[in-house]
Length: 368
Image (cartoon, rainbow, N blue to C red; front, side, top):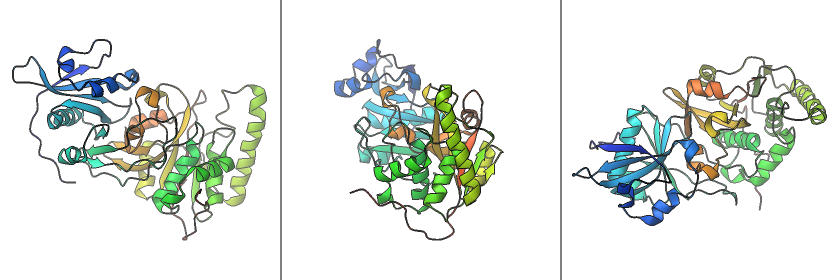
């Protein structure tokens, strides 16, 4: 993408406080847009207003509502009121001052023409849209100075527990091993059923399921725990049989040739794997980005300076977080390292997927 020439814009940055909206904002009108801004509790995602003052300094000519997941390297424009080009230019300048990698823009009212003029590229819409998931039909992204990584298809998991299976499927679709049209709910639940430790997917079981589904694809587990994992939240009687399943997965891994490396993947190691054109399924805690300590699988598939670019198949729409946040999400290297320590045992787990050795066909048929 050619760098955009930007006219300097003097902006005002203030917190977004739903109970006390600033008078210059209410004077801008566009009440239908403003009403949407107050629909969700966005407080966990640092909501703030980036506004452009008029010549007299007493009123605003434009304002954007801006949010972002914590511990990431982007800003997201939820929507704009007033002079759209000036507001967007102010947000881009604000992101540059913070040395961020990217600005996104939800397409609630943004036109493709305005987005393109401001240097934004359209995101492909998600392949799935679960009934309980809200979000705009379109979205846009602008990378700041860095060459963007290729975008995989975005698939939103259709359950609360199939993130591991979805992450593996998106990796295979990105590699060309799985056709985009075969990335659907049937494939999601089929792979999850083979990988699950009920209901979550632990690293060895997920890797074994991937290898079974695509025998020609090299798969390596990185896990610095020798015993069962992701069971500490369960009562003792629920741990025993799940631990047995994990021992069975380790036996299966040994039998079909899935190596288990006891060394965790640091951010530099993830970068090295991506430089080899491998893909990394990384288990991380959502405490940093979403505020609750739940293990969750994401796909690491690209890099820009200082950040690893991930795909997250889940977004907390109750907080105004949508697929636009979760798709092509840059995370600073040290923060990704911190997020990858899971539970009180602080184990770290990942699955590295290499290139297939031959052109094996897709293991799943697309649902009717």
